Amino acid sequence: MKTRYILFCSVLLAPMMALSQSKPVTVFINTATKPASAGGETKLFADSFEAQVSQQLRDKYPCAQTTSAADVGAVLDWDRQRELMGGDIGDAELKDIAGSVGAKYFISLTVSELGSGQLSLKASMVDTTTTPLQTQANRTNITSGGEAAYDAIKAMATQFVDSLSSLSQFSKEKCNPTNRWTGTITYHLAEEKNETTKGTVVGLDTGTATTTSITSNNYDVTIHIGWTSRPQATIVANNSYNSEEVATIRIDCGRNSIVHTPVWKSAGWRHTLLWENHASSSCEANVSISLANGRYDIALDVPEIEGTMKITEHKHFDGGCAKATDSNPEPMEQPWKIRKSIKTVHCSLGKDGELQGSDKDDFGGIITWNLTRTPMRE
Image (cartoon, rainbow, N blue to C red; front, side):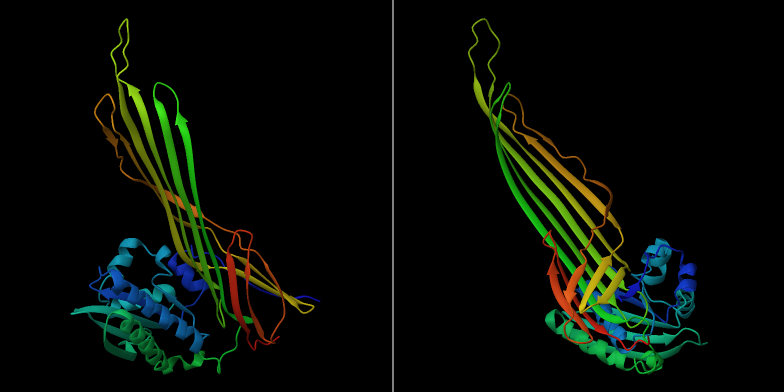
């Protein structure tokens, strides 16, 4: 008889209060940079800091429900999100945010630019249910940039998470899993197609036109299945189409007369067209794992995500008989949606308690999985 374990989920589209009622949150993570407008490496360091703390929280305290400002961004009013999370947050705002998502603990992570290539890393956690708020942990570290910063971030995330003794009730030793399998599943698709066509321009003009185009398609999915709660997916999609048409022609610029004498002049044009599509989302995914007769199946389903399509076009005509002309309209943007199907994996069971492997679909996409069985009660 086949045993089937199914983890269902849906995209976070409900209002914030509905979110807190249907999915209580133990820990809310807010990550910021100083200055708030910092980009480049500083923003990457901040993202890495949050990723390290989130991953280690999942590993050490798997029964603690966690979410972040990025996760609930879709259900927060943008102006209020900017007001509350763009700078320092006071006790009243902490209680407001935590109460909106039903969080007991609030973790604040900050990466600050100090000048001379140095950075300050700060991490703290407070209990938002107490008055006044009680600080559970507070750490600060100074580091240089580059690879040293990533090493410092990883080390500090470990020290910080290890210091969160108030979360011990959510550790593996004190809570029971609700998911049969835990681990990570990834899907990566990278396609690129180059085409070149040549043709003859026929009509009043004569000549040749060459069109070159590059089409790229990148789609990445990372699904984390925790000790408890539903699978969490991070989806990033980038598509582009870039074409260029270059023509070389001859134009007869001679005046009409009884005896027409052609006056040939060289001319041509160059037209470029660029479509750029981007979408990213943190959402929930469906994962179905079936075991039977020494084999297993893994079926995945991720939701449609929405992003932006940007179209940029340039046209140049070098004139010939007249002045050269250019047409460069403003880029146009519009919503763009994408959803891709991921093939079901069929494999033979290997090491007891582990599901590991990699497979390729018909489009060249690669799915990789590394799952470990939890001691969930039957």
